[in-house]
Length: 165
Image (cartoon, rainbow, N blue to C red):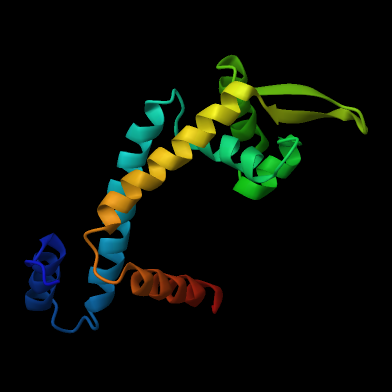
């Protein structure tokens, strides 16, 4: 599938005219498209999750609990480690989710100072529906891409390049 020139084609052409010493401009085009794609898809997903009364941050917590398997319970420390958040950021998310009835918190019987966060039935149903709706939205966009498996492989290679440094 061939597409028409886009915004980034115009930007890189302008830079090529103004700074012919810059090589290769393909990097600007690739990373510009990755960034724009992530931003646009993120906005769409945020809209999808909003219909379930959650935002992306809330979804991440609910999804992490759901993926953990029964009893869908983790400590805030485990949640923080899996999402690379500060404890303050996690507390704010958990406060919103608990207030909305998506999670409950209880003392950890194995740690006097600790708590456990558990997915409530409402949280379970919400994440169950939200993950399906989010994937459906992503699939609609990806359906316009020829050979999406190749794109996935190329992006895996790109991410591996960050780990090589």
